[in-house]
Image: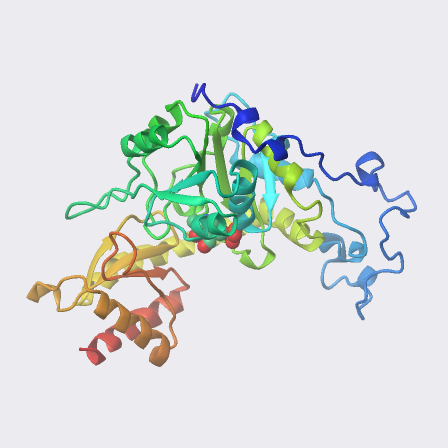
Length: 406
Ligand SMILES: Cc1ncc(COP(=O)(O)O)c(C=O)c1O
């Protein structure tokens, strides 16, 4: 199934294919707690911290593994990878996700950048993005001297679908063989909308020597729609990125991941810095994706979805709030600010959106995101769903702002 033209050996950069990954002595001799470790120039006396970590029961020494901070972290993270595979394994899939299907990075931002470094020769190759979309694809491309080709989401019409346009994307890929990666965000940022899996399949069936990168940063907010991570075993050129920064509420530890066919995952792992994931990050990530952590994630997600539904009900009661654009599949809403009340035929308006954005921040202490300049998002703010209290405050302060601005 999928693209038969895809050939990892010719698609990835030759220097990455040829790369000999960094090896450490502990690849040969594991740190099982019995060896005297004099191989990595660490400090056997321990970390320079004034607390006695070996007896720090309050912080949960065994859970957080603080006492081992003088040692380099595990470069392979197999325990965490297995938990992530278990989490995303699908009953629909005959092939199990395995740790060798995974790359783990410092946020999914590292995966975005690593994919570009793996596949795109600077100054020669290109990536494709579908605006309006997450800005880091373009930033990472520019840092790597890689050109960005844009095929917008469907934004035409009175109620734009904000879905991908597979026919136009395919035509562009056919036209430009230098495009190596196509980044697709589902649910989209800032659209908050899942991509139609049928359209995605059309794209995955297209025969080209490049990789579709599906960014599922917000997938856990998308109702009962499950992640498509298990598709990486069906399509040779699909990578699915996720993160612990959103539904898991762990943006501070910086942990993101990419499920990929094992050949692609191997290249990404070969090119990464060996110790990119700190011991603290990995210990906390293991907690978050183990059973008790998953229960917390699911209960927080439920609360976020309740507040999202509340905003969908209550925001339109404010006279100068227009439509919700995009969808309801993420932990934010994309919403129009109108120049006049709806009853007076108000239109979405960037000046109004900018005024609401700055008044909210400067006089009401609420920071949202202005998205009016994004394609198809005229007059829009992107509002993250907060706690019940934060939602109450937001609704009250928005009403006040609309009384204060022209
Ligand atoms: C669509 C999308 N992908 C990736 C990221 C980055 O996530 P991380 O914190 O894992 O780097 C974000 C963050 O806002 C995002 O919106």
